[in-house]
Length: 325
Image 1 (cartoon, rainbow, N blue to C red):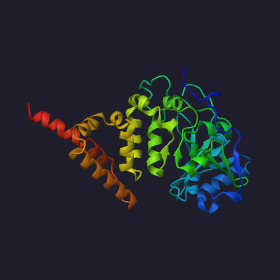
Image 2: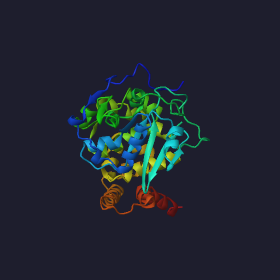
Image 3: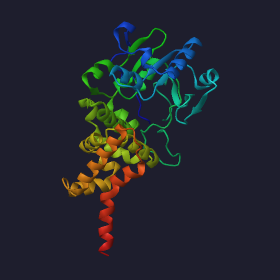
Image 4: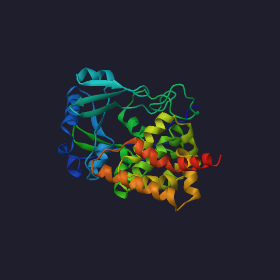
């Protein structure tokens, strides 16, 4: 049976905390024209439309969002009818991408709380996946259910274009103010559903300078091995996200702290343990700091350089073994 959220793992608050426009800092001036067009067109067509996720979180933190996501009760097909510049993507969960020049606004229909047999995004259909991992998610629901399906409380904040209110379904505002990354629902259940959530928790903690809530960090060491069940193509993409966000050095330290790095890069971890304060670690930290600096300066970062740095120590070890033959 697939593990999922149910009535035994409710949100900390079932009814949203509704904060009127005058009492929060999210403003239309912080939102891109493209995102506003999407929000208003959906609203004017009779659908519910909310800015949600990282865009809301970053505005509240005083940061400039890199992109904007919209949640709605319109289905993907209904969204496509409203926007000529729209294409539908995804197998696990159908999404609408609405493009305005170089900007893409991702529009997702509210997800139901319990869906059939979930499959991780971008996975290879031919790769066996351990029971308990998400296999499918194409079931639509209400905004309340959608909030409960989100990963962390700070990502479950909704800006409603109808009245410009901010809706907090999971105590995300308090966690945002306290600098906490907290999993919605039972952390162990959520990590078993999708082990990549452990990587996302670390990525957000490093990016935002937050700490993991004790309940959210407690199961990670025990469940870190589940990363080995994630298809390699998806892990490749997730590793890039971890290390090209501009916080690679901090991310690396947290991955090792929680025992995740050894399941992502087992050969590199072995080399680091052999020479904990020596050459491999020094080289890797310098490479990660260099990557962070390039991101800060808006310079390109290549996956080839990143993976070369991550795998350099194991390569050197292998060369020495071959030399001795």
